[in-house]
Image (cartoon, rainbow, N blue to C red):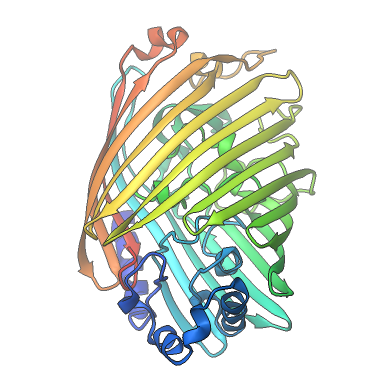
Amino acid sequence: MNQAAPVVLFAFLSSVASGMRSAEVVCFPNCCDPSSQPMSQQSQKATNPNRDSPGMDQSQMHGMEMNQKNPMNVPRENFLHEILSHATSGTSAEPNSTPIPMLMATESSWTLMFHANVFLTDIQQSSPRGGDKFFSTNWFMGMAQRSAGPGIFTARVMLSLEPATVTGRLYPLLFQQGETAFGLPIADGQHPHDFFMELAALYDLKLGDKNLLSFYFAPVGDPAIGPIAYPHRASAMENPLAALGHHQQDSTHIASDIVTVGFTRGIARIEASGFHGREPDEFRWNIDHGRIDSWSLRATFQPGQNWSGQVSYARIISPEALFPAEDQARMTASIMYNRPLHHGNWASTILWGRTNSLQDRSIFNSYLFESTVRFLTKNCAWTRIENVDRSNELLLGELPLPPGFQEDPIGRVQAYTLGYDRDFDIVPHLTSALGAQFTTYGVAGALKPIYGSHPVGVAVFLRLRPFSGTVR
C-alpha cells in the first residue's frame, strides 16, 4: 500500500470532522440518555404532555410531521421512522434502537449527514496458504435530505478508497473465495470494494398515518436482498475483515442499475428490485453498467424497537465473470437484535445465506453469528462465528481453471473470531480506536493437506470514525 495513504485518510477524516463541529447530536431516546436529546425534542415533550399518551397515531403523526421538515433528526420511534432515516446502505434496515455514529448539519431546507469507517490493518496468518499484509478497508457516506412535494427526497453517495489502499486487488483472508484478480479466481483473499459503492436517489411518500411507499434508483447501489451488508452492520462495525459467507449472504450490496419499490405498513415491509446481475469487475475505479436482467424480493419485519428480521430471494443472471453461463438463485434469512445499555449497546446478528447454481444445481450454504458489545462508552468486544461451504476451487489456489472445470462443494470450514478495541480521542468529532482480533479455523478433511489442521490469523488495527454526542 502507498505509505502516504494512512496519512491521507486520517487528514481527510479530520478535516471533515473539524468542518462539522457544530453538528447536531445524533441521538435517539431508545439508545441514549434523555439529557442528550436535542433541546427541541425536550421542549416539545414539556409543552405537549399528551404526546406520549397511549395509542400510536399521535406519536406516529407527530413524527411524520417532523419528518416533513427535518426527516433525519426524528427519533426512530417506529419502523417508518427507521426507513425515513436512510442511514444504512441501500434500503435495508436495522433495529430502531441501533445507534448510528455520524455528523449532521442543516443548510437551508436540507439536512446533511456524513458517516464513515476506516481501518488501518496489519494481518498475519499461519498455514502454507496464509499471508501477511498491511492495508486499509474503508468507506465514506454522505447524504442530503429534504421534503419535496408530498414526500421526502434523499440523495446518497458512498465511496471507498480501497482500490488504492488494498494493493494487488486483494488482502489475505484464509478460505475466502469469490470474484477475480488479474483474470484468475481469488482464493484465500478478499477483493476490495469499488470506489463507487453507492450513487442513489430515494423518494418516500406517506400514504395515510401508517403506510409508506418508497422508491430507490441507483446506477450503483444495493438491491433488496439480504440484511445490511457486513461493512455497515452494527454487529460487525468493529471488525476490519470480511465475513467468509459474504458471497452467499450480501455480495449484492454493490450492484448496478437498480430500481427498487417498497411498501411499508406498521411493522412490515415488502420490496421488489430489478438490477444488473453481473458482479463488479476487478477494475475498481469505474462504474459498471448493464441491462436490468435480475430481480429480488425481500420482506422485512420490525416487531419491536430492538428487533429486525428479513427473508429474501433473488434470481441473479451471470453473476461471475469466470462462469458467464451460470445463473444463480440466492436465499437469505436473518434476525438482528440491539440492546441499549448504559453507556453502550449490544448488537447481534444471526444470518443464513444460500446460493444455488441454476446450471448444475450445486448448492452452497453459509451460517453466521456475530455480536458486538460497547461498554463503558469507549470499549468494544466482539465475536464472529461462521460455518460455510467451500468449493473445489480452493484446491487450485490461484491457478487458472482447467478446461471443463465444474465448481462443486468440497466441505465446510468454521471460523471463530474474538476481538477487542478501545477508543481514544485526539481530533474533535473523530473517534479513534486501537484493537486486535484473533481467528482460528476448523478445516474440512479434504483441505487439511493444503491448509494444515489448525491455521490461525491475527489482525491488529487502528480504526477511525466520525461521531457526534454520545453515539460512537
